Length: 305
Image 1 (cartoon, helix red, strand yellow):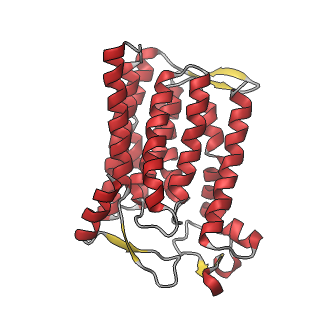
Image 2: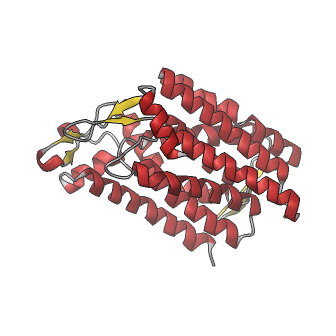
Image 3: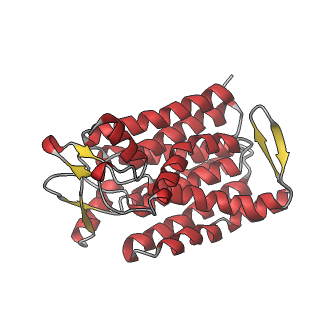
């Protein structure tokens, strides 16, 4: 699917410059369409197997999660095509959470289990406030820590590999299928997006990763695992917020090494570049993946006994 999207995007002139290369080559965009398609296909297969093999899945929860990811993917496509205002694409995922909200209300699901603390009942605030916020926040956080070859798909793969293991151990069948579906889609896409990238993921891809993460944990009993995994994204958000969300790219120095522009920390990537006094793009991505891997190990230590 990724090969087809790449060819169609280039033929349609939907390309963007790779700003962290000295020659700034044109690269096909919106590769995340292949990720969304792979995810949707795998989840639909899971629903078919549920009917044929009597797996006893929570079908309503699965369909709600699938609808939410589909809606968020459409928002990402519209943003890639029309470059929506930041406020618009921040708020639209709130509407995408409606299927998950309806299912939570029907099930009377109001609590979140937190390690070392236990279950906390949030009452009606959980479905009406926390679920929409989770979908909107996760979708936008994974869209912000981006812009380097292989980063978005690589960090997503680490998160969903971790959730897959945790879900299997705890017998969370719905979360297992959703996590494995996104993991498979990301692993299929990553070789084309790895340095030097042959295709960009686009907002359709980054938004879908965040929405799938939120949906996977919302329909499970392991919501705090997702919260731990997004900590690097939260740090990146606050660093960017302190600098009023700058849009400039890293500076390219000798030997194609990247540096934080004017020594300013405008996000997590800039912080890593500043501490290391410059890195190649590939080395920067590997260090960011290592940071995510640390939080993945924390989740495994807490949830896999």
